[in-house]
Length: 227
Image (cartoon, rainbow, N blue to C red):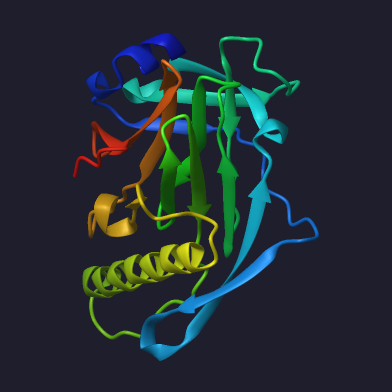
């Protein structure tokens, strides 16, 4: 599989997508600290890093890998005006951090590392959506019960947390919330099964569409969330 196939028929992908090699995030001065409600009536603080899209252009390739997985490999790129057809935006992640960027028309593809407890928020206009990859680094809940029971409670708490985080972004005018979609853990995690989600975006006719891949299916995430 190549990137053009990924773009032209993403829903045909019925095997896991593994996204590899995205350069890690940083913690530069000027980050915003956002405190949001957490389970048990407390609060958790998230460091929000605003990325200039032009600084995170990298290159990507897609190839069939082991076990028929579609491996998307991101490599360091030269940045700049998106002169190569396989340049992409690559948004990193870090524990307890949120990375946010606003896309434009310089590149045709967007990738972020696979999710296993994180959330991805997308909002804005089709030509220039804002994307956020957020990880809540909350302590493990002190809950008695089996692994499945604990995991189910944790998943619900994390999903509530990400909803509160989105509300905080709207309140601070980082996003409008008018076209907001959120991929949360309870959308893609299956209790008792090792699972993750891969999120990617493609641009066609100056409009972005985002997809998520989990449990051997690929569905649209934004602007029309297919659950």
